[in-house]
Amino acid sequence: MLGTIRMLRMKNIILVAFSILCLAGCSNNIDLTIEQGEYQSIKIGDTKDNVFMNLGSSLRDDAGLNGYYWVEMDDLFEECTLPVCRKKLLIQTRFDPELYPAYSKMERWRVYFKGSRSDFVEYKFCNELLCRIKRYRNLNEMP
Image (cartoon, helix red, strand yellow):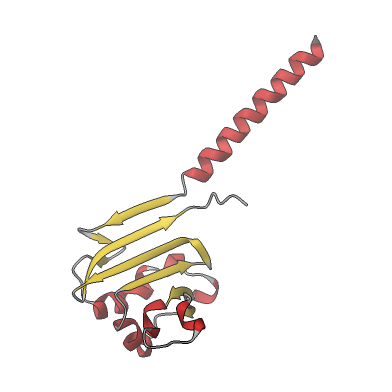
């Protein structure tokens, strides 16, 4: 009888601990789409060059190793016919001004944080103006 009571207490402790861990992990997840207003000082309706110039400072807290970000550069190679051009290319960047001409050609900028595909912010441009910001983070990845 005493063994059964201990086992029930242990199950309850494990259940409570698991619930706390789940709630703590779930609270860090983000799935946000912005089509009006602003996100981290980047405003809907801003031009590409204005967004680019402000990206480094607005994303500073989410930077990866040594202040670098990973950015998808899939729209740059539309005239390329090699198989490697059909894949999504990730480059490591700090949003240096000399890279702006490459970014200005793209209608979608997806910036990954700390090298994780499940933690990103995406900037979508319509007619050269920012029309949507998507912020996504899911830290509860399952193997």
